[in-house]
Length: 305
Length: 251
Image (tube, rainbow over all chains, first blue to last red; front, side, top):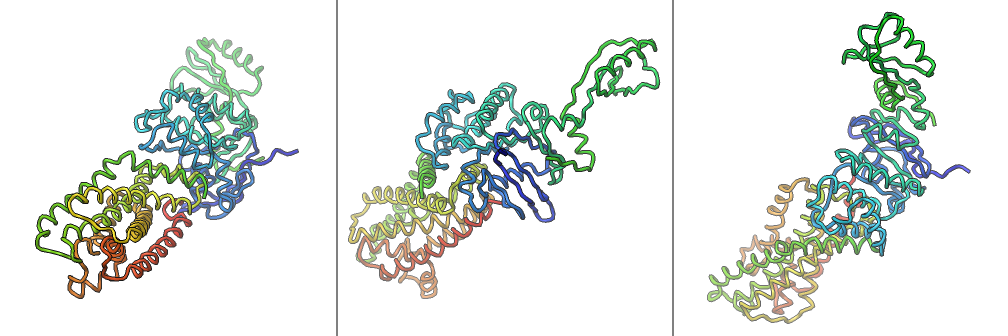
C-alpha cells in the first residue's frame, strides 16, 4: 500500500510580470515525511509555500493538501495546513493566549484550552501566556508564530525558515517538538538556510533554483551523490608532488577527497616517505552543503523520485 | 457562517474596546466640542424644525459620529493588519470572504453604535430631546454604519500606506458627511448645493435618522430607507467581489 500523499503540486507556475517565480513545479510529498525545501534567496521557496497556503494564486497548475485543492476547496485545504510564516508578524492588541484562542476560532476549533496549554508548554511559552505579544523578544515572537500554526492540529506543518535569527536554545526546543510531531504522523515541510539542520532532520529534499526544482531525492541518496569523505591534514612543509592534495588558503591545511577508508593509509605513508610531518588530521563527512553548492553552481537538473 | 465569523467579529470588537479611550472617548469629546461651540453661537438665533438649534444639531452629530467611527474601525484595522503583516493570520485560516466581510462590517457598525450612544447620552445634557420614532433612529444608525463600515473595508484594502487612507478619509468621507445636513437643513442651501446634496447617500441617512427624533424631514424616511438600502447593496456587492478576488490581499 502506497503512503497517501500529503501535498501534491502539479505543473505549478507563478509569474510576476516577466519573472517566473515558479516554473512548472511538480512535487509530491507523502504523509509523514520530513521534507526539506532548499535553495538560495529568490529561488521560489516562499512563493511555493504561499501558493500552497492560498496567499498567492498560481498562474498555472494545481496544488492539493491532503487531497483538497487549495483553490476550489480552500477551506478544507487550509484546515489541513499549519504555516509558520517567515516574517516575524504579530498582532500588538492581544496577549499570547488571546492570540492563540483567536487563531483557534478562525479554524473553527472550540474548547481548545488543553491543547493551547500543551503547545505553550512545549514551546516554553507558559510564563509569557498573558504577556502582550508586542512586549516579547524576537525569539519569543517566533515561538508564538509556531504555536499559532499548530492550534488546529494540522496534519501538514510548513515552517518557512523558522530558525532564522533564533538562539540555540530555541532551536533545540523547536526541533525536539517538531520531531515529536513528525513521529506522531504529522508531515513537515521545512525551508531553511542552515543546511546542517536540513541534513539532520529531513528525510527527503528538493532544491530550488530560479523557480525550478533542480534536485529531488531522499537525503541518503543526495549525500551519496557527493559520496566522498574528505581527509584534511595539517603539514609542516609542502607535500610531495603527485598527491591529490589541494592546499587551502589558510596555509598549512591540505585536503583530499576519498571514497573508501582504506585509501587513507597509503596516502599517509607517501607523506611519511616524503618527510612531511603531519601535525593534525581531520576527516570530514559528506555534507549537504557540498551538494547544495555543486547543484547551485552547475546548471544540470537531476530529478529522481 | 460559523465560528470563524464569530471569532473574527469578536477579535475586531475586542481590538477597538482595548483602546476605547482613543476609539470611543476621543470621538465623543470631539462631538461635544462641536455642540458646545455651534450651540453657543447659534442657539439663541436659529430654530429649525421648530426646535432650538442645539436640539436640531444633536441627531446630526450623533449620526456623524456613527458614520465616521464605523468607517474608521474597519479601515484602520485593515490597514494596520496589512502594514504590520498580521493580516496573514486571517488569510491562512479557512475564513470565507463572506464571513470576513460581515465580521469587519458588523464590528464597524457596533463601534459606530457605541460611539453614537455615548455622544447622545452626553449631549442630552445640553438640550431636551424627543424620540418620536425610535425604530427609524435604530434602522438608520445600522444602515449608515454598515455603509461606512463597508466603505472602510474597501479603503483599508485599497490603501497600501496610512497617508493613502488619510486621503480617502479627507477627500471622500469628510466632504460626504459634512455636506449632508449634519449642521443645517438642506432647504437653506442655494439650489445648486441642494441638488448636489440629493446625490449624496449620506444626506438620506442623516435625514432619516433625524426624522426618528423630530418626526419631520426633508424627504420621506421611506425614500431615505430606499436610498440607504440601495447604497448598501451596491457597496456590499462591490466589496464582496474584491474580497472574493483577493484584490491586494492574495497575490
